[in-house]
Image (cartoon, rainbow, N blue to C red; front, top):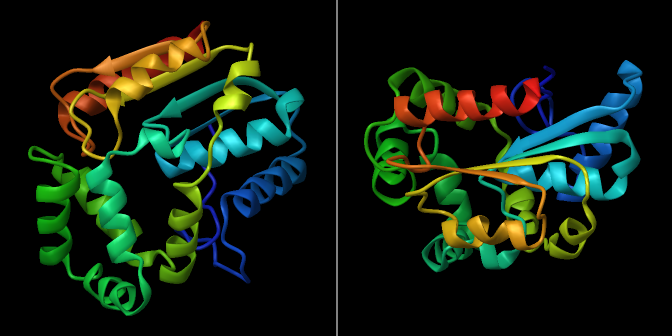
Length: 220
């Protein structure tokens, strides 16, 4: 399994804008070309799933299977409260305050605990999440987020006939879980796994269930 750091994330420098879903999909294309990969699977989590969808919509002949974890496949997928958070926190001068505060572990944990993730997040995964958040390029993250939540892949998904796995937690606070359950109407062949007693944060329950779901799908 290959997990590239997208521009502005992890060890990959942001480079020059734009930092959009489309530019990230082109980055993945260049990554795949550089490695000389043939037909391959592609997947992503949350906004990463949006990039996976964009990549698959541009280069569908390259893709064997799709794995979408908590996919934001259209603006209608997002909960209203989360849309409001994004609008406020990415607006003008507010964002630059938020960009500073995201590097404060206490502030970050409180925000995620009460507004995004919920309780019971695995300590190791919480630390990895914060470390990645601390390293991320703020301007790249802001543009990617603002662009990502406007994308609509429903028409593309209607035409997808290859295998697909969709994973979501039943208590996720960012997406409308019923909308994701109803993805089967667009992609009848998709396997949709809703993990009960889990939210957006990576709890031990979610980690175990998603590993089982993804491993089982990829082994068939």
